[in-house]
View (cartoon, rainbow, N blue to C red):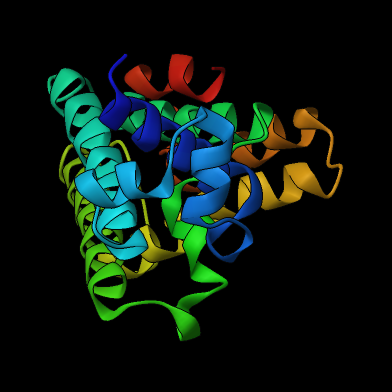
Length: 196
């Protein structure tokens, strides 16, 4: 791993573990064993580094969503939920959660990039819900755009619940509840999804 990658991954780890304001370039440099000027060479500001992490996280989601694009909507939703459950199980947070508590104090570029990432996730989820409704797999009493925001907000809270000591078994019940609230009962393709 080269120096730039070490900086990037160390920062991403710190962001996920302790949050945006809890570390500095000095902390990253000390962790890696380099001078802070080496970090500034690749990332002139902390905002530049955080924006790179947000973009990387979004690209990870794009890769995931592309790989599951041919699956049934209920499978896509289950995979997204599992992604966030796995984050919570590992004690990690997505950038949305890791940064959002510090939104008042952060650089405008970070806010804009974080908003783009949130909107991207919300739009994908809305589209998946619309697909599920049109194929009669999902029933929803809300507009898909509203339901997608509700689901996404639940998912990004899972790591916080994990840090509060919630049993990971409760995450399985949250997943079941989210799925049960959408799936049309008795639909043959929904029976296996409901049991996952």
